Structure formats: structure tokens, C-alpha cells
Image (tube, rainbow, N blue to C red; front, side, top):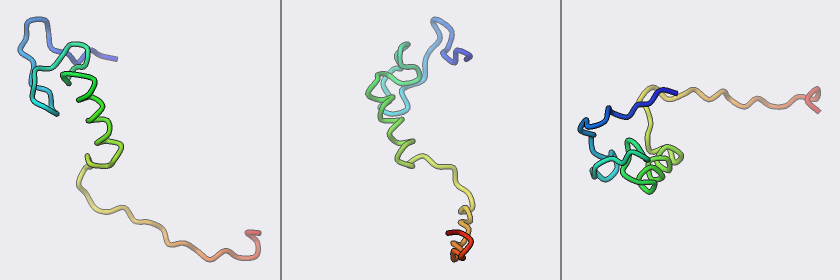
Length: 67
């Protein structure tokens, strides 16, 4: 996996959660707490890519061959 951290001495962008300086161990976040907050947002569906709603196939009635 490639290392996405900036080169030594380069200015880091702020943590995307709290805007503090990012930490080497939790890049791009400043702490485990902010990394966990971000992960929770992904799991809850808060982060989403806008687009057309997915079509859900209609449920079909089961016939006698399904039993």
C-alpha cells in the first residue's frame, strides 16, 4: 500500500474532523478519536456520493415450486 503521508518537513493539511494539525500515526487525522469519528460517519451512511436512487426489484409472489 502506498504511503500517502507528505514528505518530512512538509506542511500537513489540518485534520478533516477537528481542523487540528494531523499526526503521523493517524494521518490524515490528528488522533484515533477523529479517525473513529470518520469511520462511524462512513458506517452510518452520512458520507454518500450523490446520484440517482438505485432501483429495487419488486418482490415476486412465491409459487409452489419455491417450496
